[in-house]
Image (cartoon, rainbow, N blue to C red; front, side, top):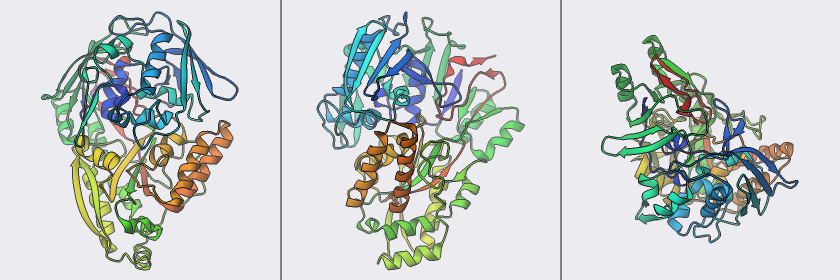
Length: 516
């Protein structure tokens, strides 16, 4: 099968993956201890058949599958599980820790913290009681578990390959990061496909079926991801028969694709698109009245109607309504340009100018056409007297580093597709630390950060949800950003392609796919 991907993978070590296009091939090559039922966010057995916590949630016992081998022929067992957990905890350089953002967000710290985002580690130790039993001990309970154990970033790699191919070598030069051979050429998991090659010039990642896979073997012998950033070009390739399917067809094309005999597979909505506000960069943005003015200036109803697919909704908070912790009493911020102008004047910011960053060369599930969305939002801001300086950057090697690592923007467009069904995976990812994206450095920001930490540590499901509801209310009072929408992205395949199951997590697994 040849599948058209909207962007290129950054590397093939899931620990250092930060975006969907890097996760896409990783999900085919690796397994996690726990996974998610295809087509839902429900938990399912992965490399572990059972997982049991102790009474206070600080110890998890995993019963592992027997007879599983890595792609290099070495055995998967409890020692391999502990090797991976200890590897993550002991990452030796600041560059490596900076790139392991999902581990940092989930486990919060390292044996030796080398980055500002790291704090007190959640992870304590791992013990291999016997070959099929691994016991993970935590320093404190976390409400995100057990669902977070299914994160693709926590995939289990071959200890032999990790050591042989210098997996922990991550180097930074300016704003760019480079990786060791493991991440570039020798990814080694237990999944249904094995890595064969990545032709960067041609933009093709080639995977081959793992005939020794522990589960049902994959339905295709070869799986090729072709990087085609332009959505129109992806559609043309599908029509020409040079690819069998692609991700993120433009919502405007859905019906035409169906009319042409293609199968449009719509995912359930499980994402957020937002306008981020970096208070650290621009002093005017530290005034909540200015942030409120920006929120009132945006016509989000029009944005959803004109730029997003059927089924998209205006967001009232930074998570979709299907996640426990959603505050149902929050109402959408009304579009009110007059109110926006009044607030700017009251704040002494009638001549506000902002550097507004947006990405190019990419399509995201929550943001089908970044340029069009930027244009619509920028025009709304200009209409209330805000001077907008556009800054367009390529998604990889530019935009994400500027926004999430260096914090050089005033405003930016970004979003999130949930990795698992927990409020902390949304709110904690955005506002759990004082990182560079939002510049959460003011005293009132500590209430948000502390509220997320307290909610995350609440194990009782009802209390966990209630705590996050309150955090959502606090965030919408302070407005570190403006939630814009949740929308249902889609995939499309030609007739004769069967078994591709759309996932709300964009966690599609191609092992069930067959082609005629």
